[in-house]
Image 1 (spheres, rainbow, N blue to C red):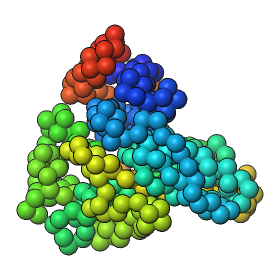
Image 2: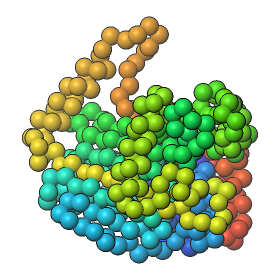
Image 3: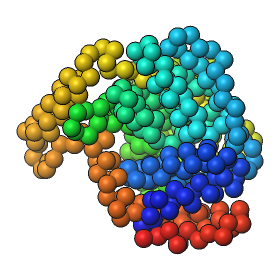
Image 4: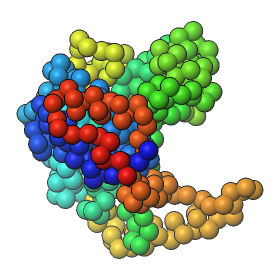
Amino acid sequence: MRMDAIAARELAAKILHSAGASPDHAAIVADCLVSADLRGVGSHGISRLMIYCERFDSRLVNPQPNFTFPREKNAAILMDADNGPGAVAGVAAMDKAIEKAKVHGMASCAVAHANHFGIAAYYGMRTLEHDMIGLAFTNAPANVAPWGGKKTYFGTNPICFTAPALTKRPIVFDAATSVVARGKILLAEIENQDIPEGWALDPGGNPTTNAKTALAGSMLPFAAYKGYGIAMMIEILCAMLSGSAFGPHTGELYGNKNRQQDISMFFCAIDIASFTDTHDFKTRMDQMIDEVKSAEKAPGVEEIFMPGEIEFCNEDYNLEHGIKVGPGVLRDLTELCKKYKLNLDPHDCLK
């Protein structure tokens, strides 16, 4: 099924506002979720609304936080998110880094005491309109076994890197340090589907294709020991620098009705003009993109894609045709509308 993106964003914002978020904050979280769906990352889209609202209702997430900046030294910033929604905290932190980068050339903001923030690209891409390079990281609940282990320790700890070009689409690399984002397994469970072999291990450390069993077990890092090392790097930048929970001490998003998550993040904005001529940089980016895309292709390959290019194509298509919505997600949206006594029917948003 397909749902109109604008209607989905409005519906999500109304649901989040009913759950206690301010109108402005509800709009940011809704936009983040629908942006994920538009880019074809349904695992981080409106499928997350149910758990977000459950945690608002139980006050495990502060729906109206007061962000503070307990440490700020030139271009180095520490932000306390006051247990607020991850998307709202992420936007505030990246915008703060952008503001400081305009003065100092580059700036970083570590975020303490936050919650799940969705797709990292949502924040990295905020730097592009300012002709900056962006970096966005977050830690996550322990769902990935360290390389060689069978018990979880690190989160899926995504990494995002963005860079503008002149006439070409920007480079937007956004990936979990696990083989896939855990949200893809969660979505498979919601829709009662199997997962491919090689994504996860069962509780005994054996490969599994059952989504429910995988969620009880552990995910695998991408690229073996290399993904494990990068996950640790992100944990250090996010949790250790900010003083938030790390590894298995971070709270789960699902199946956790008694404790806050205490998620941490790290954002960096790099002002290109402080290093080189912006027009020259973007012209050279165009050249690199053209050269990579015109490279000799391996057998069976029709096109070489740049990081983020497929997601931009998805966005163009989904803006016109609507975002994908499975029956499980549609059921959840309907239940939320009934729960908050909203005179709305998600089926009316279908294309």
